[in-house]
Length: 339
Image (tube, rainbow, N blue to C red; front, side):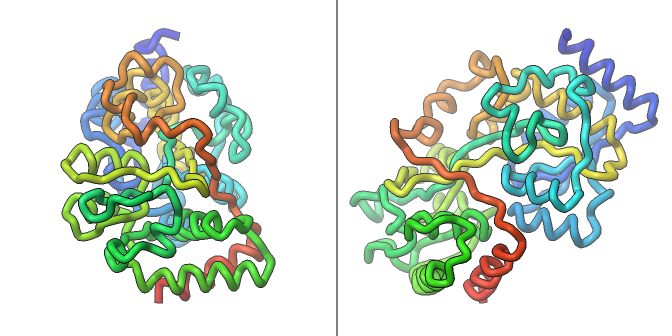
């Protein structure tokens, strides 16, 4: 279907339902205002966006009463599964989103949302760490940089303030499975992060880029797009591809249960599945999209960046959604760590 026609049809539906606004709940620094302005210009739907800094913060907020206040949230893959299991997601059929067919095949039948009935791709990327090469010039391709750092980096490390990714990277360092119920493995995980904390300067997700560009941290866990931005802003950093692997994730536009502006939400999903719009998001966020036909619209420096082109053979791991009885144990480790 023609882009203008598809968007117009959904906009007309929204208009008929008197739903001329969209309530978006998104990660920080993850959406250019120009793209929201373009959506409003094309559809007449105004957008209000609030932000959060971790998947866990999103879940806590929705559980605390925000469900029903927003139309769309942008959780990572494992959090989509959790929200679905908690009954917090709405659903749609592919024919309600004319651009549904633009989703790349690899991101269509995903285990966290088979057939894409509650979500569409937003951005995907990796989580690893970056190191300031003015401070340390040795081998960085080992998670020991974070959990048993060299003297040059000790006390100068920022880790992400999110248990899902930080504890997953720690599990990768130990070579133990995610969501383990083995008490010895859980004790080893707790001991590792507790001891490593002495070498960490801070926990921070929304500042992960800024502490590297300012020099407040010499190394830090970071998402690949944030690392690229920090490098482009002048930080002499290198993004690591440790032998233990990197975490791979996909963030997704999800329709929330009891969305007050459902038609507006579907219109926005359709808009973001246009290759030109998906590419504009990637050029801003510097991750990767999951939409066919983006390549011609991508900035070369984004398409060719080292952060978006891992070495051949790089091991990748998705964060798993643990069963509730196991997640309780991981929550206890995280709570103890943050004391």
